[in-house]
Length: 131
Image (cartoon, rainbow, N blue to C red; front, side, top):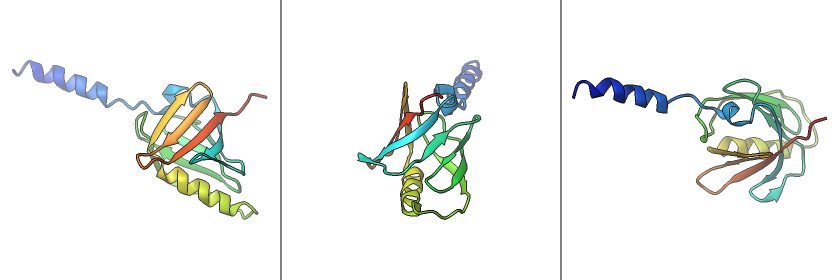
């Protein structure tokens, strides 16, 4: 039995590998929010994954950044920070940040990126066209 333990531990370590969203095609795109909970989003907000474990983007008024340390397909932002500019879309920015903070799952399929949670909330993003 003691010979099985090292093999088991190696398999367990492989299962815990950090496969964040950059490993699934998210890193090379800027994602533009199109809807929250099935309702079209009236302002512009983006997400990008510039390096392994980091998220950045533009909310309607402010740029933001955070760490994303949960392995794919889970999603969890840590240490979300944003600039503090005011604009006419601050109410939409609050809706965006509140929804983003609630998301726990990520799914990428081609040019579609969906964040969701177990409560049925959903954010739908599409890849920004090149150019």
